[in-house]
Length: 220
Image (cartoon, rainbow, N blue to C red):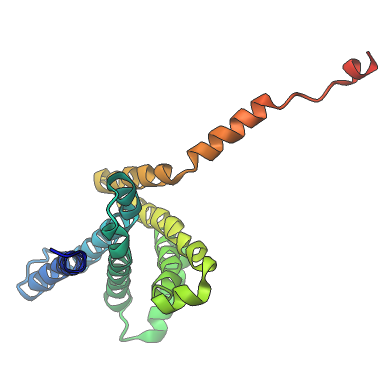
């Protein structure tokens, strides 16, 4: 198989993999399989998948480094956009059903109150806002226009991921196993990106730099 065909196949598999959870949720919704609290089930499921795809996006660079494969970087944008799509759906369920979008004035007032009083909603909304400019500027055209600033802007994915995990941890009241697992995976991915060689070089330079003479030593 040629490289172009391999990449096309990989992209097709990514689309299938990203669409499958949504299709299953639609099927559950149509067949009454969302349990006693369908709104909470939808919010939780969509939030889970948004975090999973967000972490998968962050996995692409380490995968490229460990394997030497180029295709993970070519799929990173698609996975990241699907992560944001699931975040938007997660937020939409909250707006439409929890806040009752049919009464816009009351919904906006309740949203403002939740953003002030409920820290997990504040953090989750901030994560959505961090991801918004990344989704808007994800095209090749924006990458050409922004040039080097594009990479700087897209580092917003790191605080967005941190805020997303915090949102999940503060949302869950009993079983913290899933959010803590996401937190552990995210910690490993962020530590991998830490510039360890630069830190080590800075420490060695600091140790090798001679200390300035004290006043007593100067008088001698």
